[in-house]
Image (cartoon, rainbow, N blue to C red; front, side):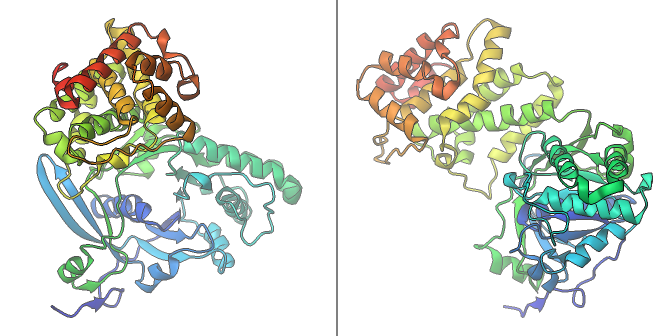
Length: 492
């Protein structure tokens, strides 16, 4: 084995570019997704910008990052155009990392840098929250939106309300319309600290409203994180002792909904990710793309899992390649769910094909049981809307989706599979108790009626969907009588 070098700017080349981006968060996702995208923009366009990372909570990884001069490798794996891909790239887009809890002066001084233009964050779903105990004088405010308002106010003062010094803010937290929620929190802090702003209150609020741009975004890339199993092999390959290698899938999608006070063209001009050939869409609205992801990625996941597991298939990739289950997945995705969306059909087909490549990742053994957690609420959010729209548009129920619901109901019966594998459902206790009670009757009619009438799960009585009760009962009987695999064959 060859001796490994320490990874830093003395042992590896590192670009020096103007600091244009403040990034709240130093975790695996941002480094594998956002920073990888920004690095590619620097390689392929005239963006010419680096990132300053700000640690959003008191304990974090900025010391590790700074210890490697913010250099690290990204390992992307998966299928692209049918071919297996396994890449390794050294990312040098982060200039430095700051802990505002120990370096608050350095954090606030970022507001004084004229080239700073973007704020990007991933502070988890809980990070975009308003805490009325925060004070403007805190060093720093405990919440992410509070820290951001402290920074914005300092910038407003430094540049005396200069319209060209507003910031473009793009949160990546996994919340639908994340930018709208963040903007609401910012306005709440502006009101909370109104007395502290004094005579600057109106001017600061107007500057933020007119010259700062808060965009909602949708992010999509699976990032397993640090590759513990393969790290020795990877380090030998790169010849560096890199403790921050991050592994992700090759697929990436970033939909950025332009702020209401700017145009798509203005945002594309300043953030040339599309020009770099990256899968970044700058759009009028994030909503149809959110629906597309939930429907064509999460929707098939939710129903393929119980169908595959009860058919004796444990891995998502194997389900895709299975002679029967593979056809079932294709039916649900291309013939049923795709018919319920409103984007151009060629866009939907391409996205669905990308999803199947992701399911078929040769480097990831994705257990179907890991998707089965809370299956009823997932079906309600991801598949039930498709059942209704399909019925409305086609005049009949989507057989694949209904079979998926029957498979979930059967999975929640528990017991053991034909090969002796234990079936262990996991959901809210009231749902678990209800299914146990219903299956104890041994009557599929009672099971069907009990599940469909459970307004605590669905928010409505599903008996109101014409023909659903009859079809679920029929599918449950088929699964009990013939087994899952044979039941699926009847609808293909």
